[in-house]
Every structure is written in C-alpha cells, then in structure tokens.
Length: 108
Length: 427
Image (tube, rainbow over all chains, first blue to last red; front, side, top):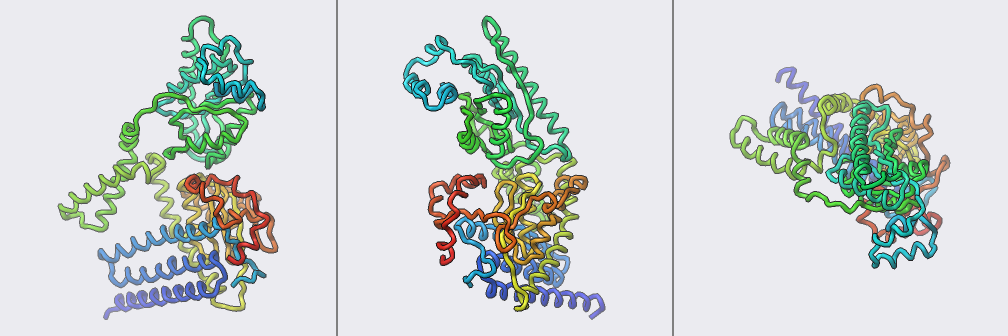
C-alpha cells in the first residue's frame, strides 16, 4: 500500500474513532443529564459530530464517487434537520410548561 | 357604519343604535345627521391587485363619513441602514405616489364641491425589524395616534411580509387596539390567477434549477433518461412548491452574494461547533464539573424568516445552547454551561448571520450584552421571570392551537405564571 493509501486509511480510522467518541459522549449525556432540555443538547450532539465524523469517514473510505458525494449531502441534511428537530422537541416541552431544571432542583 | 359605531363613544346608545340601523336603509339615513368629522382613515398600502379598488373605496368612505384625511401608509419591510434599503424605500415611495394619485383623482371626480379630505402618504416602521402581526399593529397604532386617526381600512390582499397571508391575524391583532377596522369589500382576483402570476418568474426558475441540480447530483447528468425524469420532477416540484419554499424573490447581485458568504460561514460554524462540542463533552464525562443549565432570552437583530431561522439553527447546532422558542425577535435559548451562555451573549453567531445576509458592513454591531438585549431567566443570576407557556400543561390552549403557527401568540400566554411550578415539577 502506498503512502497516500496509508494516510487515507489513517484518516478513516481517526474519523471513525472520533465519531464513536462523540456518540459515546452523547449517550452518556442522555443518561446523566437531568431534564428534557439538557438532554436535547447532548442528543443533538450525537448527530452533529458523531454522525458528522462517521459520514466523513465514509466519504474518505469510498473516495470521490457517487456514494462519497451522497454522504456529504447526508451530512448537509443532518446539519439542517438536526437543530430543527431539537428545537421542535424543546419547544414542545416549553409549551407544555416544563420548567427547565436548575441547580437545587430535586428532579433527576 | 362600522367606524361610527365604535368611534363616537364608549358604550353609549348611539353606538348600539347602529345595530338597529343595520336593517334600515343605512346609506339613505346617514347624510341627514353627518357624524362629527372624525380624524383620519389609515390605509396600509402594498402593491396588490386590489389596491386600486381599495383606494376608491377608502376615498368614498372618507367622503361619506367625514374623515378629514386619508393616510396612505407603507409599512416598511426593511430596516434603515441595511444594504439595499434605498431601492426598497424608492419602490415603496413609487407605490405610495401612485396610490396618492389615484386617491386625489377619485376626490376630484366626485360631483360638486371637492370634499375637504386631504391625502397624506407615509412610510412607517423603517427604523426596526417587524416580525409578526403584533409588530405591524404597534407601528400602525402609533402612527394613528400621532396623526389623530381612528380607523383602519385593510386591503383584502394586503400581505406586508411577502408570501404569507397575514391579513387574518393582522385584523385580529388590530381588534385589540382602540382603532376601528374594516376590510374593504372589493372583488378579489381568483386564487388560480394569483397562483399563476406568482408561480411564474424568478422563484419558479430558482426552484426549478435547484431541484434539477439536486436530481442530477443523485443521478447521472449524462444519461438521457435522467434528463426526462429530472425535468419532469423539477417541474412538479417548482410548480407546487416555489411559492412555499422561496419566500423572498431572488434578485441578481444579492442571492449569489448571500450564497457565497454562506460558504464562508460554513467552516466558521464547523469550528464553533467543534470547539463547543469539546467543552460540553468535558462537562458530561467529568463528574466533578457541574452543569449549570438556565433559560435565557436574547433579542436578536436579524430579519424575520430565513435569517432568523439560520441564526436559531446555528445556535442549536452549537452544543451547549438550544433555541427553545422564537417569539418575534426574542429568542429563548437554553444553555447548559455558563461558558456557552457567555458565547451566546457575545453574539458572534448573530454577527455572522448578519454578515451572510447583509454583508460585512452590517456585521459590525454591539454584542447583545452591550445592547442590553439579553436576560437570564433562571438560576441565581436571573434577571427576568421565566415566561413559561401554560401552567396547566397546555390544556387551556387546546382551542387556539391552530392559530399559533406564526409565533405571534405572546400576550395571552403570559398571564398565569404564579402557580405553575408545583404542578409541573412532578410531571
């Protein structure tokens, strides 16, 4: 394998690990954080960087082909739809009258 | 007559007497006792197909009812100082000039002595962004008060913010003011005609090009069959959606420039996202670092529609801040950690959004903190009360749910804030 191929594999592995890491962080956040608002923060984090790095890894792995272009498009759509979904969840909670958790609140 | 019934007087019998006269031949009865000359009649003006008929009706009404002035006002859909303002102000002036000419000639055409009605034109509301019907009503009411006018006549096709049909909420919002309101009873063009005139043109071309480009991105532009299906698909998409998806007419130097600046914004946003992500990841993974969530309010200075959506979505994409509610120009943002909140109040995303939509010159503005446009709604540093929606879990709003689509539902919901907390905590 030539140097360029090695570098590419390295990038793919690095991006995959980063994507896994941020997905893990996001999962931990959903389990640890106290209420719907703070969980919405971290749940959308999984999409932005978790899926972001994952798709970047895919794009590098398949190269400049139709599938690579499509994974970049997917990335774009995730970046547009993800905040919209997070906003919809948070707004629904807000309209239902859910008071955001603050320090000293007993809810967990 | 609609304005007579309300203007002269709070609940006396003359007003209710008007109801009885509804059944009488009203017009015949009026001239015998002409009402005391009321102030002015305000007519919001936009270049609609029914503008001519509305003005004719307004002049007739003013003469019949003894209004001293007809105020033709254009509510600015721009904010002075933004690029492109001059063009839009000039086109608003042209519309007003034309409307004034129509009104004057209608007055001259009246048989006999020329009635003592003056025609006044004005552009109002250009010093701030106007978002929902409430903002428009505020501006209208302020103008009416300053010019001694007490009635508003609406053009049935009046839509000040572009493609959205605002009239119903506007009429509703106006009903909360002392002004009396009527929609001019003029013939409206059929829907079909409207759709056709608006669907052709730049919006259609832009939508068509966009969907075709996307189709070829997924398909193969060198294969003839993809051309056939692509053109058909793009045509269907642009016929059905060009009025919905594109709410501002694309214009030549502006739209490509916005796209170009948007491209510059993408790496900036990615950098911000990554930076904030690392900070939030540390807080989540390290049990010793506490979170300090709070709800905050920021009043942002970007136009409604696409710029506001861009800003709100950018804020949400950045971990640690989450846009919960957009109420006109107020964004309610939940922040997870203090550093995210500080970043929000420093307004860098706001300046970038302004850069993308209005260019570099407009991006220089004070931060929300310096403008005093921000507030913390929770926690030890709270500076404002939390305007949480409904205390009963939203049941009271059940009836009006459909009307809230435009985010213009602020005043009613803020009423009962006192007794909500106990109920919600165990929810």
